[in-house]
Amino acid sequence: MLTIRDPYSSAVRPVVQGRRGAVAAAHPLAVAAAQEMLVAGGSAADAAIAAQAMLCVLAPDACGLGGDMLCLVHAPGAAPVALNGAGAAPAGLATAACEGANSVTVPGIVDAWCTLARRWGRLPLARVLAPAAAVAREGFRVPANLARARDAQHARLLAGGAEGWALLSLAAGDRFVQPALADLLEAIGRDGAAAFYRGPAAAAIAEAVQGLGGALSEADLAAHQTVVTAPVTTRWAGVTVATQPPMAQGVLLNMALAGLERLGPLAPDRRDHAGIELTEAAFAYRGRVGEGAALLSEDLAIDLDRAQRRGGPRAYLHTAGVAVADAAGLTISSLVSVFDDFGSCVYVPACGLTLNDRAGGFGASPNDAAAGKRPVHTLAPALVVSDEGALALATPGADGQVQTLLQVLAAIRRDGADLASAVAAPRWRSEGGAVLIERSHPALADLERRSHRLRLLDDGDTRFGAVVAAGHVAGAPVAVADWRRETWAGVT
Image (cartoon, rainbow, N blue to C red):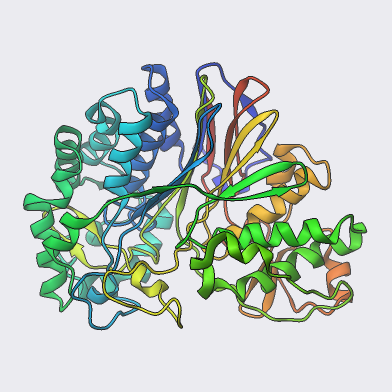
């Protein structure tokens, strides 16, 4: 009998080089959809949308049309551009919640797709969404991890009106077909954002939310617009690092990198300690990320000899990444998400999707909840721009995103590691006052000596993220995928 090896335990993945383009994404079928667009003459934008749409079909626990998409775009000769495909709280919101109908903000992914396609795409949107629509209509085998997530959220899904959703009655290995979702994807391909934010789909979404006591309305959906603006940038170690601007918390990565720059060269036994301390110091500013680049002037004071155990980062785990570069040099770093598993678990039968719970990102002032306001957002894709070209990096893991990217970037620029080795290397993650760390990490003794409260986990634990990386470097599109999770890379 053929044995299928656990994808989480695969060997270190190599950097691959393409001719028409390169892609890394959170699932092999998402990579295949992106490659199909590149072969058809599409741009990195077309490939990114195709991969993201496929992920929305395959991983409804992590992402979906009821959620958000944030991305950074770099075209040769132009400044990087940030697209914020995350929506605001409803205009009629009285009280935000961490789950259920009043945790739903306006889903932004569909309008973000249309914006990305309009500015940088080459193919008709219907062609780009066709692979995802086909898999939704024909079905796919339910993987064990999706079945486990469904079981863990079963009560929440029932409370959200999902009792008729086919997924609830399927076992791992059963075929999951999503005709309503396929219909919606095809409608978006034909009619663009209007197929989601107006008409029957918008009415069905508002009805589902309001039927459970929520405030989201058709007017909220119709008023939504993707925010297109400049990213936050930091000059560090000879390169420019761009992150998503407010209300995303990507600026926390810029702050940590600026802190490393101020520290200058560090002895090897202090490097991971400094990264952890700067991470925790930066996360103290999470509620203020709306200040954007102004936070880069804040001095993150740390003790290089002893852990201060400030904590700060939380334990969320969700999201899926896509990074793409094409032969023309267009490079895109992106993340898609519904926040918690299945988001709010509010199910919309007519659309075949669950809605996000991004209002759970609100907190203390100035990040307090208010009608029409966007909460602090965990999605934090990054772009690195240098004389060699542009490299897109992203990872799932909510508060772990900033930390994982900090470690990968530091390994490349500070330690001289090649990209594949930097992505594959053992990681740590500050979470809830402890430092989670992979068992094979070489800095264990150094960190213990500096009084870090370590919690050893198996290498490859999902809490350490799953990096996707792609870029146009030295004149060629390249990509690499993490060995963690089902992350994959491909080229054309």
